[in-house]
Length: 598
Image (cartoon, rainbow, N blue to C red; front, side, top):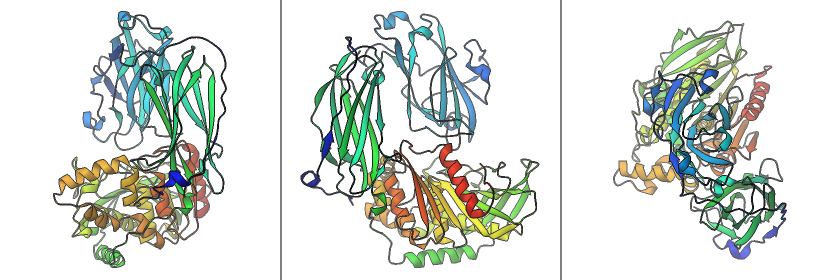
């Protein structure tokens, strides 16, 4: 299905406004990206933990264990580790390899790092991405490209790169390259940024959709580049709506070029503005930004099967016939303010699942929050939440709930994929595990049954939607960057889905796209959302390519209860502390407590 008019090029009224600021003079030619580069893929070492001394070039890291970059640390011998770690590498930069370097710096690529990093070269910071706790914000989707100024380089001698990183959950590490040091090309010389007229990047009819492009030249010299801008849909194949004519632009010195575009979108939806700059050597830089237009008016076709209601009524009845057999074991992670318990229980299909129950030591009754994980993530106790109880659930196949169902390297979303028996699918159990967790909270005498909410991010956002839809005992739903909604649209908008749907078809010979869509429709939060009766507070990263914003709104727009959303215009699949402070305040108000805490 497509949300866009195929003949839009005939109908769109486009208004383009150009502003050009050119300052200073010099002369410069960009170096080819194919020349003069040094691989730094081999020789890395890693150590878990955090120590400021590990920045120092002369620190003795001989006792550290070697690690292969280009794979997660879980796949390199550090199973299910979350937290701080450091990577270090020692190497020599031959001066002859970069003879004739015309610029003040070399470019370094460290590929993609999960989640947060700050990188040091010979003890000096050269770049960082994301934010460390307590202001934690992931940046695993950002390619790390930093600049090494010549003043830091020890030519023909040993140099040291130290990378401090933090992984909040799931996999971590320097998980995908390239790992090279090279002469900078156009992509390293120029910083291309977007400035927005509306702070959240969301616009509404009849206004135009505007964006200001700013280009900063770090070469200190002049150059001539070919410039092009396009407006596209948010689909993977990116339906072209508008294409500017290519033109030559003079970029001067270390100053800024600014251009303003204003578009009139054809319909409600999300649109990507793509700019491309290329030089005479064929090197180019492409930068894009997604913007939203009337997202609350996006109409998505509901895909419920005729037996959809019967299906979920029967699943809940099956869950009700399973004895939960709740068990609680007090943990040594308890503090002076909260008691922590490992909880074990039986869920749908008599599967054992576990979670961490954290409850304040002061007298109840306490408000409670069910917190659910991202895709294949592991939940741990919320020991800093001292005035609300929190049940951090690991549904089947997650964290410490793998006794009966362990993916063992298989794609989680493939488990139990049988179009003839959707009741066997992994998400039938995962959704019902969340309901069983609510059963546990209702079984506790210290919990106020009228004050229980649910929260989660990514897959956890989808689980939050599903829990609120399937269990009317929930008094609020707070999904962040949610997944599991609008599966057909997800196939159109997310690269990950296309890659994995192909693998799914390979795993199940004879499986057709209609088979896939029919089974997933039972678990599509968009199809469940009309059942939600509690307040909803949703967050979206506008640049999220893992859980595209259109899929979040496909579910959100089906909710008829009180609801509100926040869009973070430059965030991808991860949000910063600003949002979590806001969300915690929202949850605290509904639970009737002073604060929720982290």
